[in-house]
Amino acid sequence: MSTKNIRLEVMQFLENKIDGFVDQYLIPIEKIWQPTDFLPNSESETFFEEVKELREIAKDLPYDFWVTLVGDTITEEALPTYESWLMDVDGVGQVENNGWSKWVRHWTGEENRHGDLLNKYLYLSGRVNMREIEMTTQHLIADGFDIGTGRDPYKNFVYTSFQELATYISHNRVAQLAKNYGDNKLSKICKMIAGDEMRHHHAYSEFVTQIFKVDPSEMLLAFNYMMKQKIVMPAQFLRESGEKISSAFLHFSDSAQRIGVYTANDYVEIMQKLIDKWEIDKLSGLTDEAEKARDYLMKLPARMAKVSERMIIPAESQVFKWVQPALIG
Image (cartoon, rainbow, N blue to C red; front, side, top):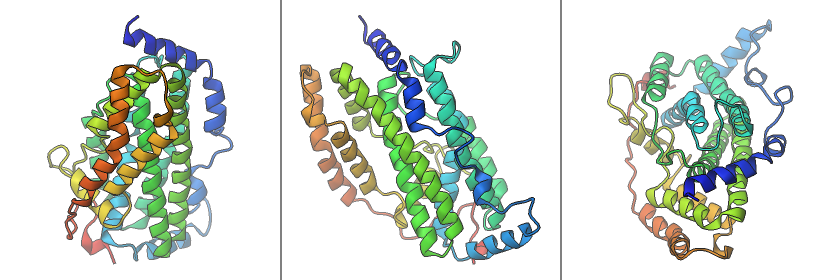
């Protein structure tokens, strides 16, 4: 039987558990928080006072913080790309509406709230150029992305396990910084989003755990492949209006590293956490090829940590069209 057919069998095996995964890792729509729960109430008589207070507090947030928050928001807003990509994974039935497509749609519904909430906050803050942000978002969706997984469910679940943990770290750090600057409302917003990301990380990493039980060698080879080629961020093609594809991503990443929101060291730590979570050192019955992959993986975090130590982040911030220095008080 071909590798692809075995993967499809494993996906069908896991699909039998999908209702349990939905119940365990996702929250019913009527019970989960919605963006309006954390924003000034436009139906209230005190709406304008609440907006004024939000804008006053927002004045104390520094430049790199705004760049990072905008980049995080745009990443969340590019959700149509992520749903269409997951719907195309082998074993996810987009047409026949199987259990996996149910998972993807429900997950997408939860994730969609993140961009909605952050976008509204940015709009009300008065600190950013919303039209430039909106154009960047449209570019990011139009440009699509290539994360190197193809339609392979094993590689895709490694990617989502890693990426959901990375977004948890990013949103959680932004929440901490916002609190330090006295913006408790924004801190709570980012904290709630981070909570969703951690829950989703647990879900996708559990899918991988289940696959390791039935197809350990192939799952390990997929994990090794993704770590070897490196996880690319969803916003890798980020660009501002009139600029070339990917031209803004490095500068956005520099801003995030400068303020400690997401660093090269975090990347290494996530890799190590996944190696530990999936107990790579304890796997048995592996093929010779998978054994070699395990040896490579076990040494990789230490090697990458040495590389990350040599990284130099520019001291000066890139001036973005999204956030003009004159707007930051």
